Image (cartoon, rainbow, N blue to C red):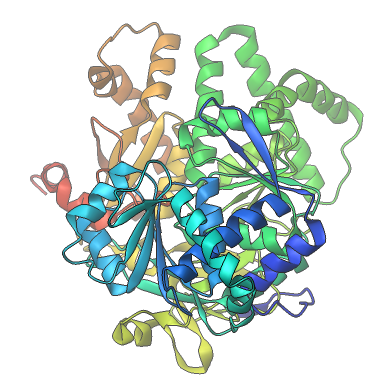
Length: 611
């Protein structure tokens, strides 16, 4: 049984007036309590209290005011995720300005467009490499008065160091002691807080206008859902230029938990062991990589250890299936699970730090099989849903009402509806004001009566939980008129073939589906070692016949689970993985289908040769 409309069930407290007021209130309540942790250059982690952060933020906010930043004027932040990003953003909020976020991987021409379109007057840049991009575009950045660099000195002209900005702020506060408080008090709920430019697959990115009321609602709604506790520790690595990372900072201001910050993706697992967090949010690709690493390492070792490992997960999944039906696990199965937990699951949880209450997944679909694998090990992943245009968080599974494969119920105060064509519509306080300088694009998605057209297709189950089936624009039709949802197929394949990094399904109005596959080099090497293969060159190994045969077997297994018109008739393994740097993935690790179709058009055409 399904339904067409659902609203978040929990009562919602009155949100704060602004993000600045959220910060002031949090500092007032917890000044001497730990707020953040961050590593130094020697990988030593240091704690910072809310009072420490308040001092840093106020100095920078005063510096921005001294530079002439006025109400709602935009200040860019062009950096990886680090504590300096957080402090700079809070300083912008306290000065009454608005933050324009810029991914550090963005190319110079797009940076010039984003900063010009958003009318930035000051830009925080991470290091000299980011400053160099700005120098190259300086001729078009006529509105940018100053560039403030996190790492490195200023140049005495256009670029100043972050320490220089703080000193500038000290001077301003000496003559205007209430400047920051006055600016923060003047911020209104409908003032612009953030401009986030969506990384579109074609054309220029669109600037999503998010107000203070968008973010303060998100904070109040997340607190009402009660999925995060004040005494917990978060590990935050997500790009803060993306709404997913930003909403977690807002939740912290509302709730008051501790956040450990380090945006280096290659250190996620190592950091989990050091920080021992209570929760972490991530895109599905991170959970896929953990799954692949554990599975391929175990299979490469083989023997009794591998047999015990697979037996443990069979037991764990059987036990969770019973619990999810409301039944108790006792008797022989209970004894088996205790043994499985001691021999296998405890070690996996310890690798994740040993204190995880649960993970949160968003930004793309999580494979049901991978969700069940983590669940069996005692590591629940709560999948959520949202877009930049809805301030990131729109729905999330509750620990007491979750279903793997769904994105849960809406946040309190948010409505979700399924349109006649299956598209998901959202209405609530988290929906954006519109696209900056783009009224036509705004009119296309902001519909009558306040509904926002998400572009996603899905359904709502009898318990009010939403399931996303695909992106509306990604649904592809064969020449016979049959529709295929590629993301569901791609997600299933990656759980069947742990060495797979990505699968991109293609039809292009042809008579059958094909796929491009990329592999995780580390996983392939581990598999090859377990098989006794000795192919030294990584590229040669990825494209070798034994590897292709292994992938082909997984494709056949996938096909056995699909409708006839969905099956993959041909596939090709690409020599290298898709990447953000090559423009094939968005910074939130979503596939840029159009880019890939153009870049690998010859490979795709070859799969249809003679048909």
